[in-house]
Length: 448
Image 1 (tube, one colour):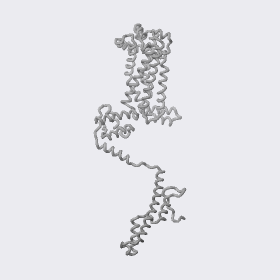
Image 2 (cartoon, rainbow, N blue to C red):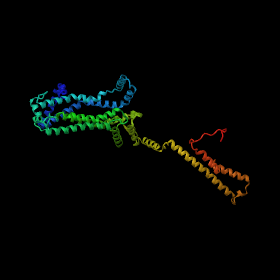
Image 3 (cartoon, rainbow, N blue to C red):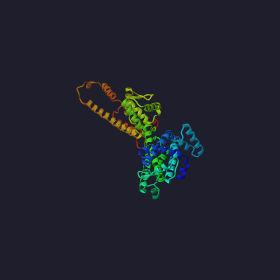
Image 4 (cartoon, rainbow, N blue to C red):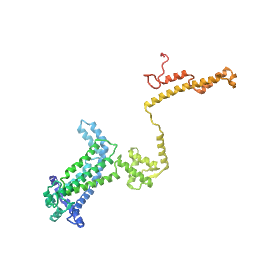
């Protein structure tokens, strides 16, 4: 670590100058030799660096989203040119160029921050050894060596010996307790930041190996920082813990205000937007109006979360406009309710087995119906034989045949006897080994 830090010794002068300037400010409030003055100077250094890196962070977010969206296409290229690695790399570079994606953009904030990290490590190492570095002269060096954070000197490490810790006017127990707590907090903040990114701000519709890699890194990075942390001075641990907390807060802001399309965070954001629009009858924020304008412009390309937002807005009686505003419309609400009712009234499509079983049941009921008319006709015949005072007794036989024809017409084409009902049932119910459903009629020349 000392060798790597020595490579960035050229930047120790500006880093030490920034620390001294903040120390002069906080020293006037808390005292020049206190751990608060030196500790807050390191925290302020982190905040200043991270503010300068915000443009790179924006590029990192865009690059990560583009990489997530390109994963299906990248997978297709890998499968297509499996045996030709050169053609595979050429197609990948072509895809990156067409979409304007730079895979290294996701690493830009870390790469840009690394020189300051190693420069601070080099400065604190020199303070621990009692050497003047950068603009830190002898009086400032003595003040920094006396500064303690919760009993641990800024330049002390977890792996330092008791003699070295004693030379910094501290106890080994205090140093190890403080450094262990800071290492745990540093690793936990790193894990939580990556975890909330994977759970809330990832497009759940995209399932690619890239997502599995991100899940793996979520567990590997905290372990790496925990192992490396035992070799970091207390001041560097303050630096790294502060930058992790900044990253976590920055990530939470991005997730809440600019979520990834198709993610759980986008669903929650659109629910808040819908609630505000329906309560106030308008989209108040200029940034939110721009979001609504983007959703309207997408049209049929909207994802599930965006379609849900537009339909819920219509059910509430509002319509999103092309300029990002919403207007009250009772017609749209009625159409939305009518469409939902129509979807609810549509019967479910039956499977083939259910349709066949239903046809067999209808065949059985047809045979039952074939029996009932014969019974009724039989009862009518008996009623005709019984004596009555009606004029039909004195009517001629021709009128009796006419009456029977009328009865047949009123009863339709139903079978008149039990034998006809049994024949109808036999036609509708398939024999064993015979295909179900309507059978093809036999040719007249074929044998019965």
